[in-house]
Image 1 (spheres, helix red, strand yellow):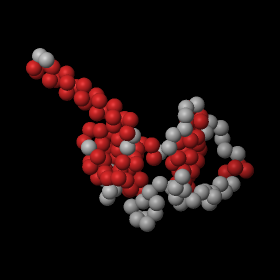
Image 2 (cartoon, rainbow, N blue to C red):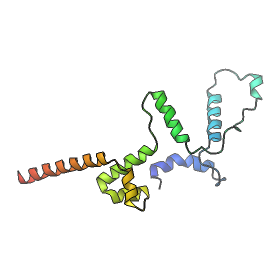
Image 3 (cartoon, one colour):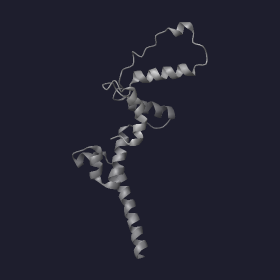
Image 4 (cartoon, rainbow, N blue to C red):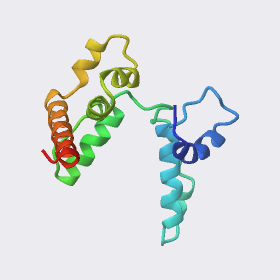
Length: 150
């Protein structure tokens, strides 16, 4: 399920592919075409005649991204920024831990689409869950103290 904010972002892509329902929504070939258009529009010097008719096709780019393309892009960005690399799957683990700590393991299981809670447990960071439980216990104790004065 895509949140409403995501609809606005995806709408131009959906409209562009309206007459091609079988086409991939995001395509390296389309991305490279857009990049070439942007470069051409930003160009400050006149295009040389030898370059005007040159065929710079996107034939070498596929119509879809590889499964590991997102991870590869993250790796490159991390290296460029000089920060430690991380995996996109870490987002799934982190979100599952947050949901489990606030709403319980059953909610995390449903979010992740698991049929068995044991599978969900693999995704959860037990230290983070424990820290969250400790923080909740401290807050509960403070509330009891505030109400009872003990």
